[in-house]
Length: 148
Image (cartoon, rainbow, N blue to C red; front, top):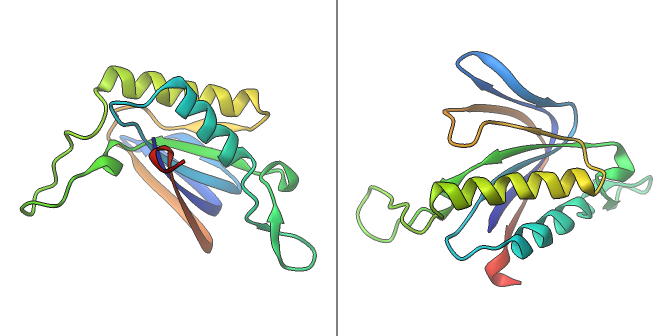
C-alpha cells in the first residue's frame, strides 16, 4: 500500500458540488492499494499513521501525534499512486489493485483507524472527487508498505 499523508489545518472532499467529508485539522491521507496488498498491510499502515509524530510540541519540535492534538483524518482512495510513468506520456495504472481489493482494503484501513480511536472522514471509493486542503507546514510524508 502507498499513502501520502499531508498535515492540514482544514480539508474537505466534494462530489458533484456536495461536501461528503471534511475535517478541521489533522491529516489528509491519499491511499493507494497494490495487487499484492493484504489486511496486514492495511493494519500496519493505519498503526503507523495513527502514531505519526509530526505536530509541534511546546518547544516547537515535531513530537506530537494526531491524538495528542485532537486531530482528524480525511481519507481518500487514490489508485493513481500506483501510476507507472516510465514509458510514454500517459501513465499506466496496471500496478494498482483491482477495484474490489482496493475498496476492501481502503475500507479496512479506515475501520482500523477508527478502532485506534481516530476520527475519520472519507471520500467515495472510485468517485470523481475534488479535494481541497490548507496544507500545514507544509508537512508531507510518504509511506509504502513494500519498503517496510
